[in-house]
Length: 118
Image 1 (spheres, rainbow, N blue to C red):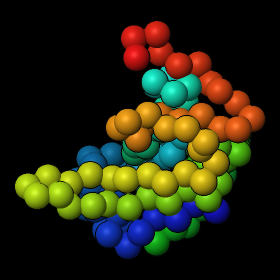
Image 2 (cartoon, rainbow, N blue to C red):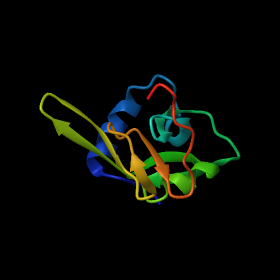
Image 3 (spheres, one colour):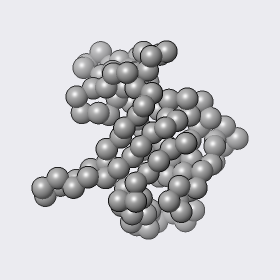
Image 4 (cartoon, rainbow, N blue to C red):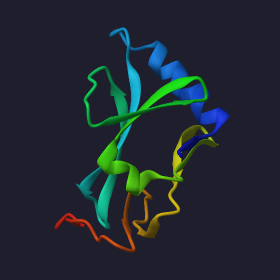
């Protein structure tokens, strides 16, 4: 299960409404890299695959590749305002280590492939 706060969902729905391609949805994923081993991927997509799991979260279509769910199960996404800016925050109960900016992680079972530049 993935949780998206109402604040984050509202922001994402606003962003989805600005997309020019009809049928776009939120895709969440994981890729090798980042300072800690795995990087989060969050973006809009309109391509579907047999490898995808579909969820309805906060009345929004959210898609995750089946292989990535083991890294993202229990994930919590929020949106926080900070002064004149704001951004999405991610809390992942599967992460045992994260980088300083919070955009990469590793799990107890897998270390991933950290970027050499970090």
